[in-house]
Amino acid sequence: MKKRIIILGTTLAIVSVLCFGFTKWKSNAVTDSNLSNNKDLALESKEIHGPNLKAIPDLYYGVDTRFAAVKKSDVQNATSIYAFLNASEKDQIQHIKSVNLVVIKNNQQSELQAFGTTDLLTDGQMKLLRSMDYFNHFTIRTEFRGKNMETGVIEDKFFGPHVTVVPETQATYADGKEALLQYLKENSLTDMNVIKDDKINAIKISFIISKQGDVTEVKHDAMSTGYTSIDEKFMELIKNIPGKWTPAINDKGEKMEQEFVFTFGPRDRC
Image 1 (cartoon, rainbow, N blue to C red):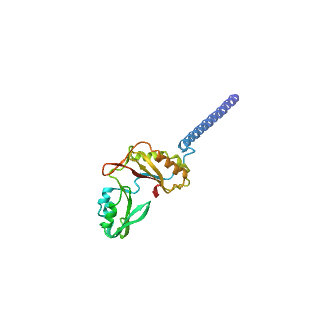
Image 2 (cartoon, rainbow, N blue to C red):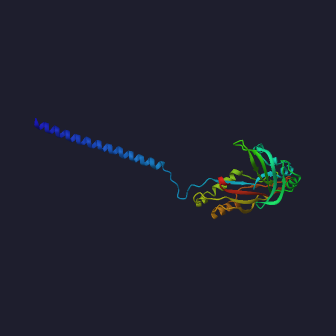
Image 3 (cartoon, helix red, strand yellow):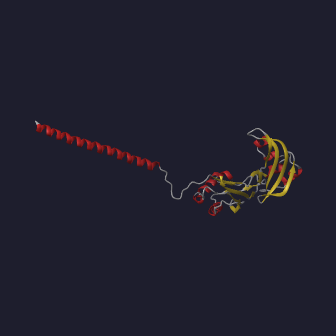
């Protein structure tokens, strides 16, 4: 009897040890499995960037006339300053104090000026406007008393629109303006890696579309990004714009050259 009890007890002890070992093994297996899954999730959620990629600031790319484009016929037929203001600007003016028409040469105000005191252009101002040729530039600085559109308070204000005289039909890029800007963005992207601390300045590059629709006379017009490699890259890209251009046409139906300006820089300063 005692012998049976001893055998039974020994058997139960062995079974208990085996069960404990199996349970511990299973618990460790589950834990290891969970750890393995967690590692996989961590790798999947981690963003991995290439060695040459870095964040770049919000940048502006634009190709347009030097200033706001107004057809030569509209410039020569203008009799009021309102020919050069939009509806919102017109609504703000309550009393005009002065109107100064100034011709712009070499990106600076010249001595060619004509002064007035009402919205109606003086004989001198209209004469100066009618002397404007294609791609001449001018500004009309209008000082007035007007309504602040945010507060409604009447205060001293001014408008100074800058205008470029353009032909009846401007030159156009065959693939469209968006395609042109996309070409400039995509082909300059890797060059932006030299930008340090999000610090970059604006640059302007002018070029001419010839009567034959070719890109000519590419010039570093004004300012610099602060990075020679970026300045040079944009000069190269402008010189090698792919595709075709349709040349500008004047009021006589004749093909003519047209100047455009490429502007690049921080969006909040362009």
